[in-house]
Structures are given as structure tokens and as C-alpha cells.
Picture 1 (cartoon, rainbow, N blue to C red):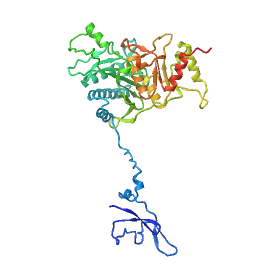
Picture 2: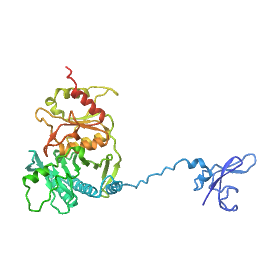
Picture 3: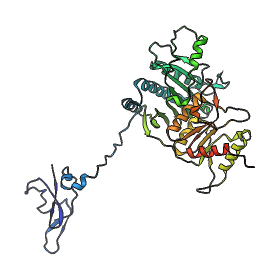
Length: 420
């Protein structure tokens, strides 16, 4: 029913399309449920000012039409990962095959999250009794999570080559309908935290096919030397990444992703079993007051780096307080906190490890891609991480990553003359 504003005797009243004899007519005495006031001189009633929110209001008041209506978001409205990926496909940011690959990775992450939550109950804590190619003791969930990732990627039918931190060499997918995407991943980052139920995560990166490295393998064929060299060409610089992300396993399970158009985070809703968009277009703060270094290695670091850490520990502007030190022992946890609150994370070289501890292909490159997409920086001390060309599958590198202003401050210390 259309309504309009009617002004009578200096007071604004609501004119209705009801007939004059209607009990809702403003020209009669007010109904008992409508507040009114009596004119003490004439004894007549005049209704209080009524607000008109009728459909026809814009026609009566043109000025109101210029003000856009704010659409309130329904509190039950949500966007899940699948819907978001389909929108990226429709926008031309990714293709259907990459959508399938990313969906298969998210499925692997859900399975790993479930196992981690029950690890103490189903006896999945402790070591596997094996050692990986880097000489590190493997946890039970290291092995299981690696198998889950590989199985999900194989079954997607869109993955050509799989390279895992837990595998000696990359794996060529045998399925005849396999695609050409190259997926690199660390199935469990921070696996030393599993037994104490602390933060862990998974890291992945996706590269496009290298035309010189398309391998056609039969089920029972063995890698000859030529094919093995071809698969090793999976070593591409991080600047070639098409997508990268991580899954954080903590008080919440958070799947964070970039396809080259910003960084988005999805939180697993246990009620629905779906990753729901919770952090849209994340931008890392330009500065931060938190640093994350394993200071147990302080005496093994270069003197310039020591001076930088000494600077962070001293009270300074803007509040006269030193930086806060935080160290989780899980790269995923460190980066997740940094994306939201800023700061800097460092895993530098030292006298015992000339190349640092973290793998370039599986950890440093994907995380650097994410942080740069959010406006941050990542270097090995002197050059951009994404520009490093891997020479080996399991190559390690130092890394300093985080808020752009904090990384630049560190750079100034590393290249400056040592202050005695």
C-alpha cells in the first residue's frame, strides 16, 4: 500500500490510502494505541510526528533517493570455499582444472585436521621409526598426512607431478587422465608440536606445466635417468607460482589461499564440514611490534643480525616498549599471526647451518608468495625469495619475512657497516 507525506497545520502526518471513515484515518481522533497530545487551548488532538518508511517515500522526498540504501548482511549468509573457487573460475582468475586441484587439497586438509584432533585417542602420536630424505625423524602423522595429500591429488585427475618434502624425488602421477599441474607441499609443518597438541599446519604451492617436462609413465615403468632429470625440472622460482596457501591446525582450522589476486582465509565450520570465508583480501600491517626468531641460536648468528635483535629488545617508539618475542616452532602459525597483526619472522643461516633450516620449494616460496600478495616482503637476507631458482628439490634457504617496513629495517642492518 503506497503512502506519502502530508503536511497539515505545521505538523507532519501520515496520509494513507485507507478511506476517510477508516479507523486508521489520521483525520479522526487517534486510536488508543497511537500516542497523541491534546492542544490545551482548543482541546483537539494532534498526532505526534510519524516516520514514513513506505515504498513511495523516494517519490515524495527526492533527496532521499540520492542516499543509497545499506543492505544489511544476513547473519546466516556465508560463502564457502567451493563457491569462492567457482567465482574465481567465472572471473577468469583460475580455470576449472585448478579449481579441482585446490578442492582436492582442501579435502586432504580436512582429513588431516580430523586425525590431529583424535591423534592422542587413536595412538597417532610419537615417531614412525623412519627418517626422511633430509635425515629428520618422521612422526606417524608425517607419513599418513603425506599419503593423504598424494591420494587426494592423484584422485583429482588434474595433477601431473607431485613433490613432497617427505618424498625422495617428485612423483609423476600415473593416471591416464592426469593433468599437468605441479603441486609441491609440506604435509605437516611443525610436526614436533603434534605430541603436545600445539599448532601445526600444511603448506602447498601450485605451478603450471613445464612443456619440457611432460612425462608419460606406465604403471609398472621405472624412472630412467632422463625422466628423472625431467621431473627435477619441477624446480621453478616462486615467481612462477599460480597459487599457494596453507592450512592452520589449531583452536580453529584455517585454510588460507591466494590465486594471485590477494589473500583469503576460510575457517572450517565443524557444524557443516565446510571451509567458510572469514578473512577477505588480507593486508599485512606495514609495521609490527612482534618478532619471531629461535633465539636459542643467537650465539651462532652473524654479528649484524645480533645487533638487529639487540635493537628490537630495547625500548623504543612509539610507546617506549621493546618488541615482543613470539616463537611457535611452526612456520604456518608464525605467518598466520603475522598476516593479521604484522611483525617479522626469521630463520637465518648460522655457523652450523649455512643455508638455514627451511626448504625453499615446499615452505619458503609458497609462504613468500602469500605474504607478498598481502603486501609484505620476503628475502633471504639479500635477495627476494621468489627470485631464487632452486637447484635441488630439497634445497634450503635462510628467510626473513613479514611486514614491509620491518623487513626493510632488517635489510639496513644486514648490509650496513658493523657498529662496534
